[in-house]
Image (cartoon, rainbow, N blue to C red; front, side, top):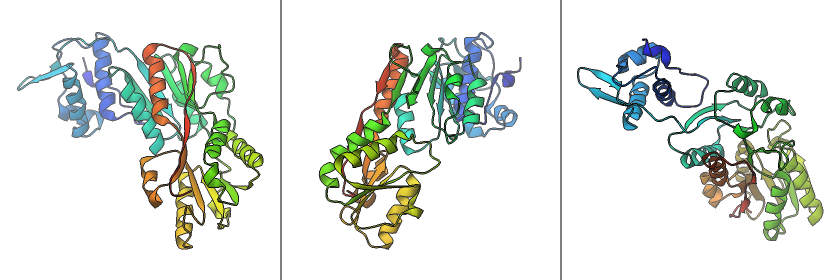
Length: 342
């Protein structure tokens, strides 16, 4: 038996290669292809045959030894130590991108799951065609499909694609699809984009009243939902604030007395640079609010005010749906973190 052929390393997967290596061996043991006392290739053989580093091969074997699947004896090498229990869950996790706040979500999700769960993690870079390719090639291979569906293409045919996944295996993250009505058996842990921005700005109203105009910087080609714009406009109209919406900071004439709300990190950086060059004091001359809470924003400019969903709660709730075998539509709390930039 050629054990090397049993090990599958997917170069497109965001799952670490050592984890893919370990998962392939565990799958072979679960299926009975590999049995107790079967000898495995050396680290050098793995590295050369799979075109991975020695460190990666060694890390994969170290993980397998830690969980009791492998053992080693000088002169004999590595061998299967025992049978393994069938994994409780095999999960396909598909993110549109990996950013600071998405990493918070990922870490919370993984930490809350049963440690024996297998997670195959892919990133499709907001590209619907890549999302479709990854998903269609892996239908019927997982016990759960956990998906974030944010695309740059506008309104691609997502529904007809995800409906190929059984409802009891599908969990949507961050965004609930319009066809997912209560009592239809779907599961999602999601933001309510329009209501969330209105509520967050309302909570910040005592500080916002110190300014004249609100400016939302929202890219033309953005994976962020248009509901954010609707909620922003409604808040301004309800409170009587002047407002403008621009696609990026290049089109904005920064003015004293304005509050700037950015959804993209690049626009936040450029806004801070412009304010610094013009010697504008954030929290006094201009206000700055950024989407998505991350640790670094607590420090920049003595603290950037953020409006953000609770990504830790989102990850934990999604893991609970899997661990408890539940189906539910769960909105996640959305908060404003008031700091010196406003």
